[in-house]
Amino acid sequence: MQISDAQLQQVNTQVQRLISSDNFYGRRLREAGITGVSSVEDFLALPFSEKQDLRDAYPLGLSAVTESEIVRIHSSSGTTGTPVIIPYTQKDVEDWAIQFARCYEYAGVTPEDRVQITPGYGLWTAGIGFQAGCERLGAMAIPMGPGNTEKQLQFMIDMKATVLTATASYALLLAEEIERRGIKDQIHLRKLITGSERSGEKIRQRIIDSLGVEYYDIYGLTEVYGPGIGINCAHGHGMHVWSDYVYLEIIDPVTGEVLPDGEPGEIVLTTLVKEGAPLIRFRTHDLSRIIPGDCPCGHNEHPRIDTITGRSDDMMKIHGVNVFPAQIEEILGTFPELSSEYQIRLSHLDGRDTMRIYVETNGSVDWEDLRGRVARRVKHRIGFTPLVKIVELGVLPRSEKKTKRVFDERYD
Image 1: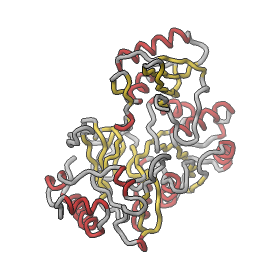
Image 2 (image 1 turned 60 degrees about the vertical axis):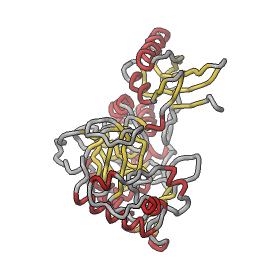
Image 3 (image 1 turned 135 degrees about the horizontal axis):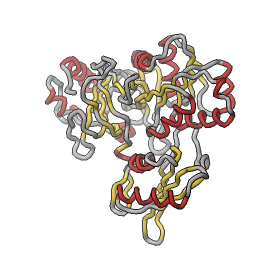
Image 4 (image 1 turned 45 degrees about the vertical axis):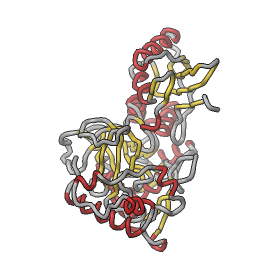
């Protein structure tokens, strides 16, 4: 989708504000001789911004407003390197809540619902975003935060929660625990909204089958408000992105060339009205595509991105081959005997890189036959044979937050 005249005007306003603020991106624009944006060509000439730029601006070098206008900060959930600090004005906080409330509406959540919120609070954007949108909508928020599964299930039953918000990993953990305890008939959930991590079709279906819920994926990242800048509607996995707040591009992650609708690539986002820390052409490293054509829901003013397939910086290089975790997950998803859970471990033994893939199954299949079939199918797809390890259902760790699936032990 090409940027509209109205969006160009909004970008131009942001460019002027950034130059005036003299923050990191304002200085970059000035050094590039850019004074404004009045055409598509001008927009495409704007330089990209990257997460490292945001780290280099620590602590408040991203701010495009005076310190007295900052009412809150958030930080991305990464555990290594310099933190990224995102400042918010009062308007940013309100705009984020408006977008999040819209997500709930697209998912069919109403003021009559009771929303159990399990993502983390604090510097992380997830919990407080889910709560602000819920309150803006007028539904009842049950702000549990992460962990304490015993209490989560007690409140889910006693408060008759109808909507669960969680990472896909924690939703799976809760679903399996509900199944194990035989308490599904005491659960009133009708909808699940997940975010913060990519979830494959197998884990989605496992949760849907266990909980009997409608499943919605929310999109967002701390650098751009947080979760809540998009969600799928009832007509499929495609997530509508709110074009009145964010302009969406898909680029070739290697060349930076903008790709046409339908072509897979890297998501790039520009904030159109954000005040505290406006971002221009921010490279998210999330891989997806813009779904071409109209959506049956009729909200075609908001473009749809397909299910996130991975991240351009998640690539593993082994035996000279570039491999993405999503490729392995897709292969494993073709085996009905396997659960949704897996681990990939890379190690260096006797001068040679090795990939081990751990997968779960139950005891009713021939494990040795299954191991061989999985190994052959992976080799057919990526060109070399991994070591496949079969374990019993439930052996691989479940997480109350995001599940770590790739462990690169070659450089430990």
